[in-house]
Image 1: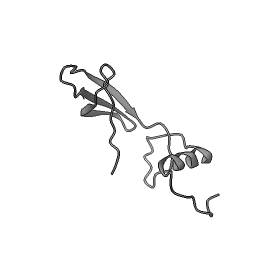
Image 2: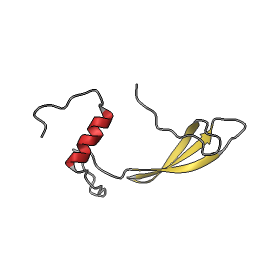
Image 3: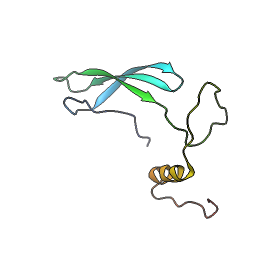
Image 4: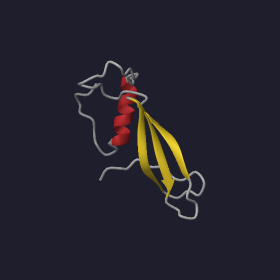
Length: 92
């Protein structure tokens, strides 16, 4: 099951629901949240930004220039995403 992107209300700590989002650029979105606690009812805007490349795209957009993660960071991310998997003996 995939994890859902979400946030807790910064005021009451309840789950918040994404109501909508607006693209600001190919790497930046404004995300509109609404607290699910009816007594609180807080709504706010957060930003979601692409900041680094883990694996290069097969269809790169010339308008997007994201720094590429160094190899040791890619391995760390792999280990975080796949805690039970073992890397191939051919990975160097």
